[in-house]
Amino acid sequence: MSASLLFIFVIIYFGILLGVAKIAGKNSNNMSFFIGNKNSNWMLVAFGMIGTSLSGVTFVSVPGAVGKDAFHYLQITLGYLIGYLTIAYVLLPIYYKLNLTSIYHYLEQRLGFNAYKTGASFFVLSRTLGATARLYLVVKILQVFILDSLSVPFWATTLVILIMILLYTYEGGVKTIVWTDTLQTSGMLMGLVICSIYILSNMHLSVTDALGAMQVKGIATVFNTDVNSKSFFLKQIIGGAFITLTMTGLDQEMMQKNISVKTLKDAQKNMVTIGFTMLFVISLFLFLGGLLNLYAAQNNITATGDDLFPSIALYHMPPYIAIIFILALISALFPSADGAITALTSSFCIDLLGMQRNTDWDEAKKKKIRQRVHLSFAFLFLIIVLVFKWIDNKSIIDLLLKIASYTYGPLLGLFAFGILTKRKLVDKWSFIPCFLAPILCLLLDYAQPFIFGNFRIGQELLIINGLITFIGLWVISRPNTEKN
Image (tube, rainbow, N blue to C red; front, side):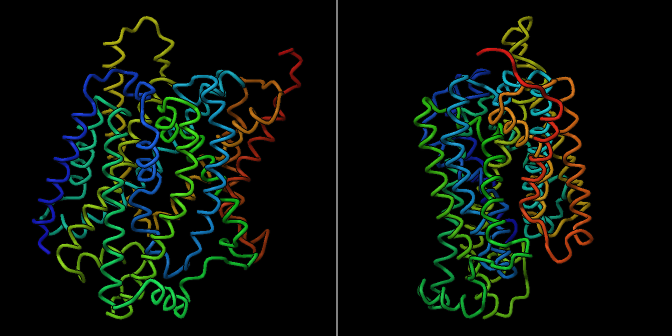
């Protein structure tokens, strides 16, 4: 398949995306950018958030990991469902009751100003690292399979993609991406289904036959019963629940879209719908991963991991599949990157700069500052993606989960302390346990072989991180003697 032709289709796709954004972003203001004027349709938000939750990492890494880890990722997805239900019926009522623009205002109202700033800072760190890791994976694939042959340097590819994202999020923010994410999620799921159907047809297999062949090959096992393994099913399910609770429920990017919905009831419908839909969609991705392994074995294809899907789609399938794959991959990229830059801009302006508190700034000045912050985060994304290229991590999904374990733990501890206790925090010291907890978890992670022998900590490292933060906050707190 000609790299130039693929590139032309990418440009056409972006033109359509920009057109949708221009229509959706008309008459936008600062509140449109931050929370879509609290007027978003819950069904559009739910569908678009699937794309944001999955991203290019799911599109490539989840199918690519099946050869090594079978269907074990479904264990985490079962945990996701528990997490989404918890968000719907524990966190969302709090956010809507307080009428929040930034969810971290809850920390200020419950724990204090320093706890609020600390929580917002950890979100900025977490989402910046996570979003750039996702962006790096997709840029790397586009670079290796298309743009290297056109002599386009990696930095230029990254820069152009970020400029594309800026073009359709610069004015409208959340008001725009609710619609663009819907379009992009459709493209990603269409690519998933079409690629699966093609392989089944090419190999003359029914769905049942394919699952049987995967069982024989040993790559269709869902539950890992080895207690010592990182992917032991209880670890994965519990870890998945807490990953969703933190990376969705305590994450301004994900909640920014959710609290843009008109009512609490609709927002809860959104969360429940996402939970069950994610379980179904991840199952399809794992099934595709199994098909890719069967196809690779039949055709003597040696690619593995993150390289498996793009290698087969671009080099061993008809040209129309290559086009569909690239468009679906880009559809998976943009929802995670555009939402991240928008949410980081919102959190930085509202939480760290205190834009809503500053009565000296008129709307025009606020807009100007917000736009400068937006551009600054795009530049920061460029720098960090280049750093990831230098590191060149082989499994981005493992890297993402590791980052989440360290950076979302303090957020988990802060919110858990606020919701589960009535104690009054000594606010000026609140940052100390939040910064110490990840360091202690890092030491624990490296010392595992010496402490636990063959036993390995998996996704529960996030829970341990949150628990250490919670205990630290308890130590620097006192009973609340004030009457409510």
